[in-house]
Length: 563
Image (spheres, rainbow, N blue to C red):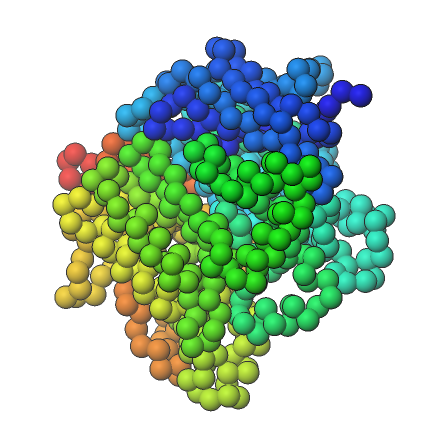
């Protein structure tokens, strides 16, 4: 029987330095040779590798013409399997756009937190999906400007909040009365989440033609993943947890992490080579993620990508945490030094610095103060009784962002200030985040007498969800957190926790906005423009959806000196 395409294709890495290479990720339904063949003669092929009975390939595409856009097809064992040929398929050809080396313009769209949209015609309780709506616009308007890259900043799948369809599928496999119930339990069940999410026709086409960079957040594994040392200890006592964490990391490595890497990084990756060389790479990969879970310092999920003169440094803010209450940190020292090197090196070659982190650096002030207060109590500032109470509050209220790691917050703040200072500073330093189910723009206000960035505009750009919901009570809580009353509440918490003022102050300069949404940065030379769009139903009957612009601004001064 001929091999079939089970999932993909996903266009992942496109080389901006040379403009002639890309990678395309696919899953086949049996072992085969996967090939990408472009209309201009570029292409590549590779043999699939196997993990847990599934067959994957990350196809290296070479020979692209810099500055061109070319359609491509996918073949398995020489037989075309993409694009679909049925009469009902309504999307244009998938293409690869190869940037011209030296180009100074890049469009970056980003967001996080995407529940899989229901099947066509199904009721969608959380409203239109922003990715689906973007796909509809790009497919329907040949003149629409496509993003050069799509950054998915966490919660690409929800292992702990499954859909009705997934719960029915799980119930056919096992007894949902046994833990972990309607959450996913193993690698096979994780693959089902990716099918549900990435087989959506619009999203499938979008990911086949717009390059993507990804990083996990908590729901890719479980809500509040790695909140604290006691949380980890409690989870490890659960009989189902080990299979869950190993399967979560294995599926992330296969479906998301590999595509973040450049062809050169893939060639130098010993794990990738070992998995590909094995008849079945399951045990090889399983040992790797078991070691990574036991000692996070053994693996780096963070990575760097350069898009011309725009640099992206994507930070793992989940798996690599140091959870000792007296030494809490987002990263160990080796990772922290790596981050400094990636952000500060060769700044003269960087017009814009993008720091991708699933969790916002600058939260609403009341939320920030609540998290620093909680961290102080958990490490014993007010005694053992307060520490026990604070741990319960931390888990119940999700108090585990950068502010809950005060030393790491200060280090990141000083690092961003240094990155934005001096004659070689980029024009903008943008921290791109999601997680908190609303969108906003926040900007630091450096204390008097502090070293103030000489030229860079430093901003926190937060955008979520892509497709999810937020209860009305939480909306009210977020609005309170940004208000003057919220600042007074935060001040009282700081006094009780003896934490003092943050190393930097900040103000909200846009938002909060609620709904399913995407942000896009357009970076030209040393100019930067921001656009926020909401996915909204259109028509009196609510059928169909469109992206509506709700906010635009320049992040850099215009030539007339205005902001």
